[in-house]
Length: 413
Image 1: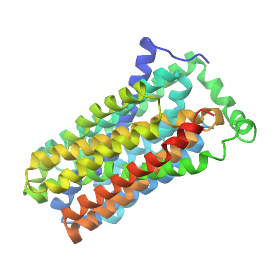
Image 2: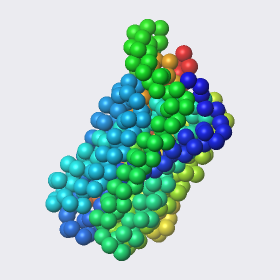
Image 3: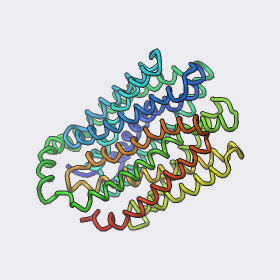
Image 4: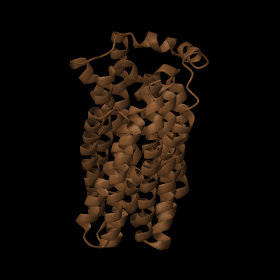
């Protein structure tokens, strides 16, 4: 199979992958963006509503492990189609759930289906693109998550004003279903033209032959992988914790309405796009050590979290801006640890497996943060939540810097 090195065909494939990730984000974070309005409209307690986000994060993390394993053995095209179509169905069901328990169950299934998307996408891009194109494609596809977040946070207030929170899920379901059909057609054309199907048919044998033989992962990689996974848990807790609860923090601290507070969430993904570009540029200019650069970006996040804690209740715009920089830093770390590290494992035949395993760690952090932030804010207030975010960010920086030298030594073996 020939690699895509540039040109119109490459751009279209990158655009298609980014569109898939855009649709997946819209249909995955819609519930988190609506938490404040669901609490207000339905009168449910905050911890009870946040259970759906927590369950979804857990099932998404578990699904990442299954999806990662399958992605090295089954056609990514099929897995992505199933994930998109299934997620459309779950978004369609949510408005009809009679209580928070049913919501949590449905949204948990949605989390597992969503997990069928990212590891296969990484596997597909690693196989299709050269290393240079893969880096560029990873950033463009990651834009899909930011643009999806912007779309959700712009659409939610309009739906609340013109209809109700349930209409958001209907729109997300329609988008996912349409994207599933588009993916099935367009990816089939690419698969046929590049001979990707024949490569997939050989993948299981390649994996089995690579694991026990000369391509066996060095023993020194295991503790480093544990360190990477710990850092990813930290960035997931901060990235998704701040994204989910920033509207509630703004609303309760500055006494703003839910519509205005949700709209303030648009600033977070806007800044994340900038951070993606900055992280890629620094990565390309440096020596390519993902952990060292992640540690430095984590350190910037620590400074932002401290400033947010010191200036709480000072001004809503300042709090929103500091939250945007903090989450932007975590998106930069996510790009380095989730997107740039898995290709190093291609020689072991486990790109999708490693991708799923690492991405699962993001949502372990997300699940802990979704529930922990809600409990902490109700029991101790937002000062304690921001202090917790600061400690977690500091831990992430320490772990990345501690393992950076060892990672440098083994990543190119």
